[in-house]
Image 1 (cartoon, rainbow, N blue to C red):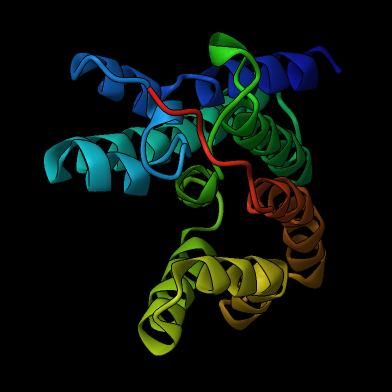
Image 2 (tube, rainbow, N blue to C red):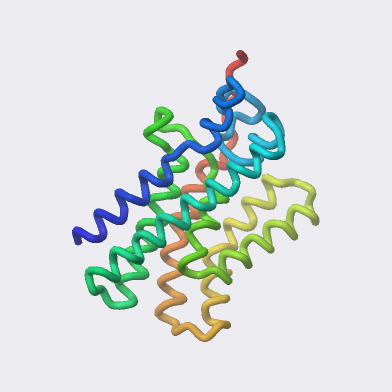
Length: 202
């Protein structure tokens, strides 16, 4: 239980690192006051430059990956069984996405979490995460509507990760754990994809 609490705490604090806000401050701006007001890589790239946008994207992916990798390491040290390690790592990943979405560092505001969700997948179920990324890119190209593509990808994500796990030979118990473990990620991101009030001018 202590391992789980520690993993969740570490995951949240990593996720709460406000990459886009810090990038905006390098330009003397506030990320919540420009463009869409979203604390994410796309808003950064559109309004502060492509290079900063890429840096934020990498940082946001890294937050999720670091959270689950750290949780796996902690669970391994304490001798948890593989299913226990997966559960602890998924809990840390969920905490990282919550931290990104509602960061204590910037007054409980944050971003939509797509990049951090991808990062969460990399140490745990990389093929499932990359499949989700591929679906997102395909839907953006087909619909030309990034918001719609993101929502559709999120709705498919738990099913996709479970299916990829089964197709790559994982037992059904692992596929079910991934399905249930990714559902909270989807819920958090969908909540952040709701229409927001326009950011204040200035």
